[in-house]
Image (cartoon, one colour):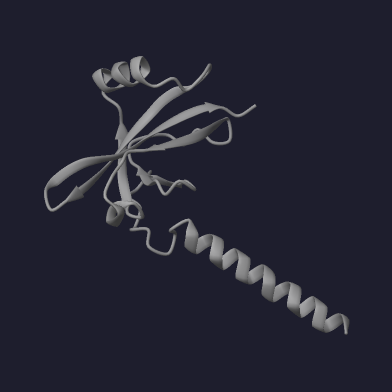
Length: 126
């Protein structure tokens, strides 16, 4: 009887881990360039951070998705550091709270047409 219960717990755990891995999009993530890392958020924003340092666990990342067509919502985007003009615009437009900072803008290249998929901010992990 205990073997059945233990076996059921193992199967349930493996199923949950597999489903979580699938929902985060890691099965469809493209190969990472050297020095890059990936972030996947529950709101559907998935980004490969290129040219940025991973500040975890000192900071938590927040993903703010842009409104895009439904067929792009589960796609992986490439995230780059914000320019000074972009950072200044976001700081004046969107309030993310004390201690926060804007980290990156995520873009998708669809046959040469590049559009914004979302933005990444970070806050202190307290």
